[in-house]
Amino acid sequence: MSAKAPFLLEEQFIRAFGVYAAVNSRIDYCNTVLAGAPRTVTDKLQRVLNAAARVVTGTRKFDRGLCQILHEELHWLDVPDRVIFKLAVTVHRCLNGRAPPYLSDYCVPVAGADTRRHLRSTNRQLLAVPRYRLNTYGRRAFSVAGPTVWNSLPDFIRDPTVSSDCFRRLLKTYLFARY
Image (cartoon, rainbow, N blue to C red; front, side, top):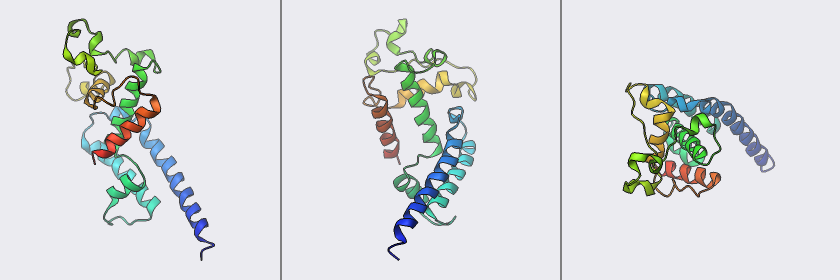
């Protein structure tokens, strides 16, 4: 039986990687449009993610502890946190000049705004959040959702000198710590 154990682990790894690649790539594709979306919308995608976790781990539908498996064993974020992660990474790219200009134009530091230059918050690397008219869709636009997510992050994560890899690691650790 010990001769089959490495094969079973390898088979489980291949199955887990295949499910992860198929499901998560579809969930992560254009998920920034889900910023500020109602919970009814994100819950549908969360159910798909939960089903994928059950396939990978071999748990049944009504087994307890699925959230623990998602976060601690598989290291998968919930769908709303995936949206926050992707928005924050996009804003970080905008601030470091590695994003298209049409996105970078929406990430204006508070220190760069003429009327806010003398505020204490200019040292905290905050972004200016524009006003919006429609409460349903206006707050979901990247111009509003991106700076809002960025401003909600702790100061040590918003450090502009942090590399992209370190930023992603810090952000994911911060999001997992909220569970």
